[in-house]
Image (cartoon, rainbow, N blue to C red; front, side):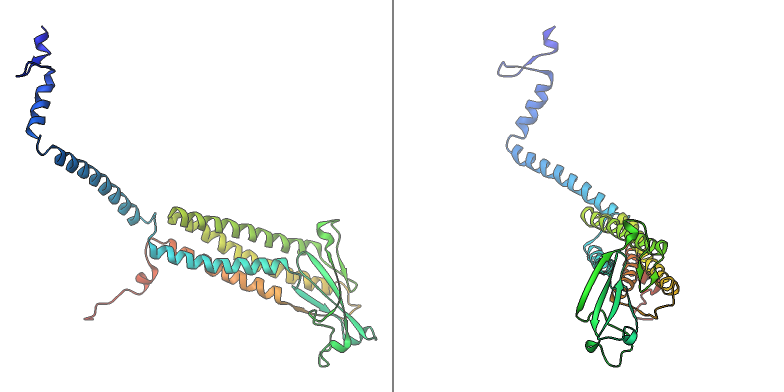
Length: 290
């Protein structure tokens, strides 16, 4: 009965049924066993690496990962978008959106007053007439040295309108411009997060939501600028007792340039997210013979 399961080798040792074949295989490959084992392990590892390499090539061909050239282009487009973000923060955080100035001779003394404000606060400044350019008819500019007084608008504290030179601001327009600017900043942060994830994970999919965020943020920045300009016109039309000269200042220039740069950056991300090169489609390469 036990002979069915156990056999005896030539030396009298008891082995299992599979032991004979194993022993024979071991005896046959005694000389080249270590080399064959190492070769088999190398073949196994090479087979795994080949499988992984084919998988990565398939993933790259479908456009889910990026090459080094694509990564460089994405970083360059991200730099363009970052420039727009910096300009937006600089413009939104400063109060030199518009300057209001009456004529120099309106107060009939050696000083005159000018005002400048932005989305959050306004400033009045007392200037010396002697410091103003003789060819300039109005008081200003606000960059001249003088006594300044800045206060935050009551829109965000008590909900009331502000009065400057007997003119009343339009609360709804000012608040709408500020909210558009804040929402655009939120979209910029979301777009930056998408680009960071795309570069860290090497996935091109995140370029599409990033392009949407940057383009929409640029449009909102420009809309905020338009709404703010309408609020300035409404302020000037509220009272005509004091003649005022108004001019948009450098903060508006920053915001306008930021909106254009953000839109350009978003368009660049759209082009980079395409599965093909638009330049090759629009301008196909011709053969040298033709």
